[in-house]
Length: 99
Image 1 (cartoon, one colour):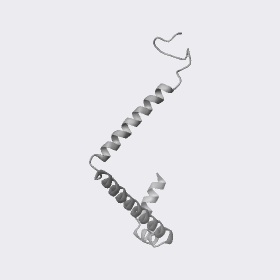
Image 2 (cartoon, rainbow, N blue to C red):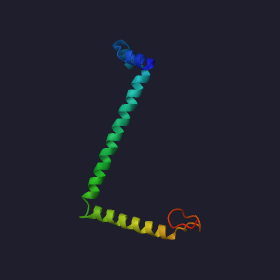
Image 3 (tube, rainbow, N blue to C red):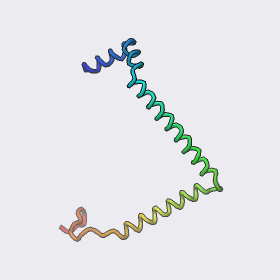
Image 4 (spheres, helix red, strand yellow):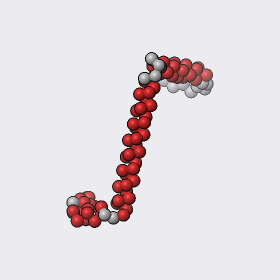
């Protein structure tokens, strides 16, 4: 609680904020933050452009790819469930279990 009040007081002191903003570590942190935000924005725009390109491809191409992914995923999941070993005898609990 005391730390919060002290920090609030310091951050509301215009002279201190001005002096901190002129310091090298704070300026460098601001530069790095601006660089990271700009890179994230550019990557987001690039990803959106690529998605639009996929959607604008041959008619239904994206829909066909999604359907193929769904079918393959479902088929592999069912195959994996069939091939897994069953529980050892006597390990079943609940209604109908042999006690």
